[in-house]
Image (cartoon, rainbow, N blue to C red; front, side, top):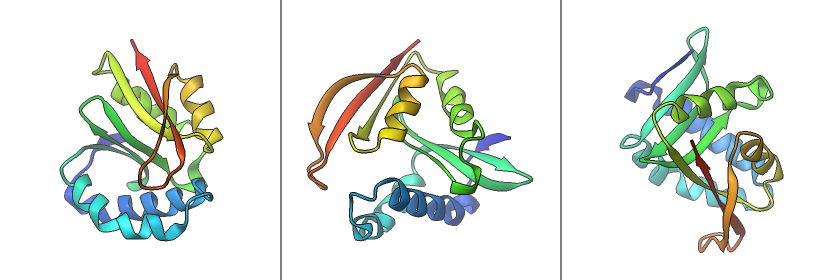
Length: 140
């Protein structure tokens, strides 16, 4: 089930955010994610977030800032079950265009987004990590 985020979800959402960023981005020191934890926790409280639950337990979420997808995160034990696609489809319902950034080395995420209709629009360097990232766009 997908529902809107509420403030009581913050600790579970942040745990998924931290764990999955560290696992998906082995090319970035885990200290980077740990040092950004409090900043992201504050930002999430002001973002548009949808959570995916199984038996009332949060197993994934998508975060948005207008038409920009800040991230889709699914707990490792629940990946490959269509949860990321369901979250993405939820936000596609109310938008004609979506944009996101993804690290070039995160080939699994790039494949996922391409499979769901996103195309690479540009390539940039992330100032914080010095890693190459793609800007990807989806249009209805």
